[in-house]
Length: 191
Image (tube, rainbow, N blue to C red):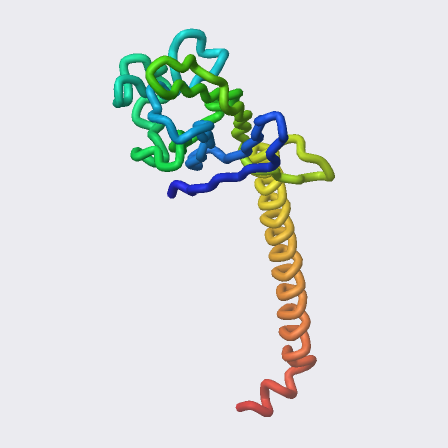
């Protein structure tokens, strides 16, 4: 089941936002145009992707041909009407390969150049598991730890059962020896 979450850790005055998410989450990469002028171009990029875009809007429509393949059908405008200059995008089903820095640029009006509006650093991590006093190992360490605990419990149960059986066996031998007649008197008494 897909979890939807937007986890902003802090917002710096420099326009850098840090977001942490888990695999499968949906995150919102926020960006707002500086004025109410018509939005001509929106470019969401990740510098390490070179020429491909995370999301690009031109000529009053989304341009899927310029989008990096890993983002196909996972990124869309949060508000398709872009009310109040909101050009934020949602990124669905995040994966570890989505780790990185995202930049939003907007061109408004007929002649305005692209302007850098915001930078977002996305960190995708599989929960913070603390096992053995540190955060090393993560989910793999947790799985190994739980397996070891399970095996130890199973061994303890088997050993406990063996002691129980041995104790029961000794008790039944003691009961049999108490009930056996010492001499022939008891046997004659029963006849």
